[in-house]
Image 1 (cartoon, rainbow, N blue to C red):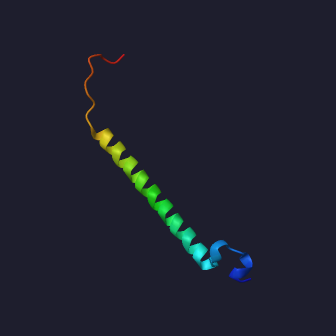
Image 2: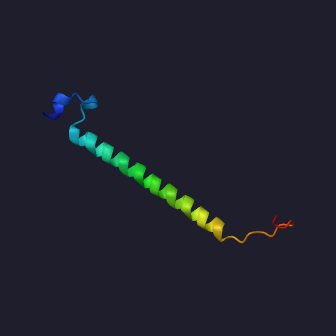
Image 3: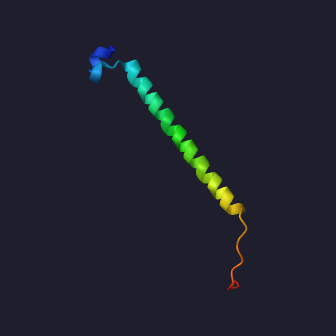
Length: 59
């Protein structure tokens, strides 16, 4: 079975489609890693801040 038998749009070959899918997955996974790293960094920074003393005692 060759690439022309797949009737891919725009004359794309199978290798080109696989390369586009691989690039999209790379961008998606990289974005996820950046997002999770940012959330973890913000959470760690928030946990390290001192808790302000409130006027009321604990009940």
